[in-house]
Image (cartoon, rainbow, N blue to C red; front, side, top):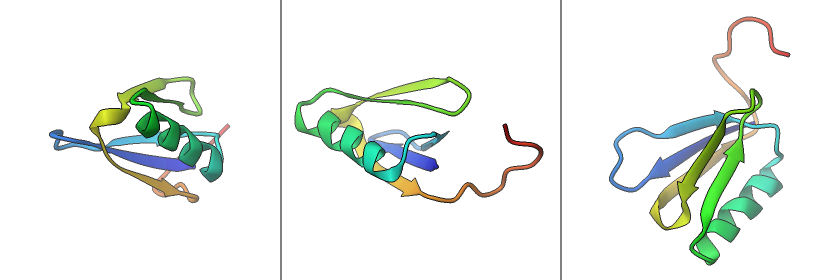
Amino acid sequence: MEVKIGVQNVAREITIDTTLDADAVEAAVAAAMADGGVLALTDAKGRRVVVPGSTLAYVDISTSVTGTVGFRS
């Protein structure tokens, strides 16, 4: 699942391909924004992205992964 994260005052968005489902990502975003914590997501290759919840501008959750080339494991 592809997740795009917009951060306030940053021109470039963060794109991550995670193995979580849409409900789990939404729950993580809601928890980060509710208590002022951090949004921590891990992608399919093990890379971890941590964003402060107070700086989130938007989170786009897409069920399809587009533009991939090559073999996927």
